[in-house]
Image (cartoon, rainbow, N blue to C red):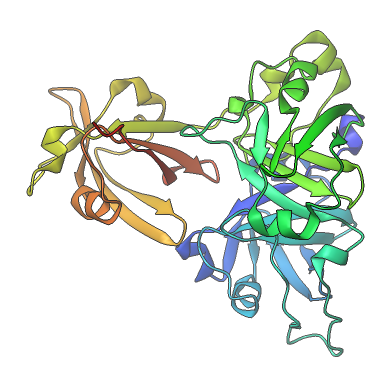
Length: 349
C-alpha cells in the first residue's frame, strides 16, 4: 500500500456529551495525516441518501454543525460513526448501533435537501453490510467472533462454510463459518500474517460482508484511525511500531468497596500511564451502552496514591457489583477522561 495515497477511515464512539453538542471532535492522527488535503467544508453522505454539509475547524480538530445528524437519526451514546473518505470533501458515514450492527436507516432527509431520499435496506446495499467488534479486555479476541443475531438471521444462510477475509492491502486469509453456533473463525491467521501476537494492540475490527464469499476487515488502533497495512512494515515485522496502543485500567472489587459508605477505591500504580494524565483533583466519565457515570478522582502525594473518591457507590449499585468482580475501563476516542467499562463477574461458589 502506498502510504501517501492512503486515506484511512476513522471512527467516533458517541457519548451523551457528543449527542447534545453542535460539534464533534475527530482523531488528531487523522487530521495530522491529511492536514494538506482537508478542506473547510465536508459533505457527509448516509446510505439512505441523506446528505449534509459540515465545517471542518482545523484549529480545534473538529466538525461544526453536527447536531442535525445527531437529531435526525436520534443518535444516542454508545453508538459509533465510521467515516470513510470518498473524494474531495465527500465522506460516507456509517451509523453503528450499540450492539455493533449497522443501523436500519430510516427514510429521513436533511433540512437542506430538496428531494426525499430513497429508503435503502442495508441488507440489499451493494456496499455490503457492516458489523463491528471492539477489542475487549474482558473477552479477548483470538480466533473467533460470534455473529450478532440480527446479522445471522439476515445473512447466515448466505455465508458459505469456507470464506475469505480480505484486508485493505489485498491480503487474503481463509475463514470458517459454523452456522448453528453463529461463529466465524480464522482471525488468528490474520495476526500471524501481520506478524502480531494478538489483536490486543487494536481497538476495533469492522467487518463488511459482500453477500458472497468475502468479508473485508478494517483494523483500527487506539487512535480511532484505520491502520495502514504497509507491506514493507509487515514483511520486516515492524507493523506493531506504527500502532497506537489503547489504554485501560482495571479495578477488582474488594470487600471494602462494598461498604455502604465506601470512602475511596485505589487505582493501582501499574496504570500510571493513565493516572499521570489526571490532575490532583479531576473527573472522568464512564460509559456502558447508554448508561454513564462520573468518577471524582483524588491524588495523594504523601502516599503516591490515586483514588476514585466519588461516584463509585452509584456505579457499583447500578452494575450490581460483587466482591471479586473485575472492572476494565478502556479509553474512548483516545481520551484519558472517557472510558467504556467491561465487567468480568467473579465465579460463584
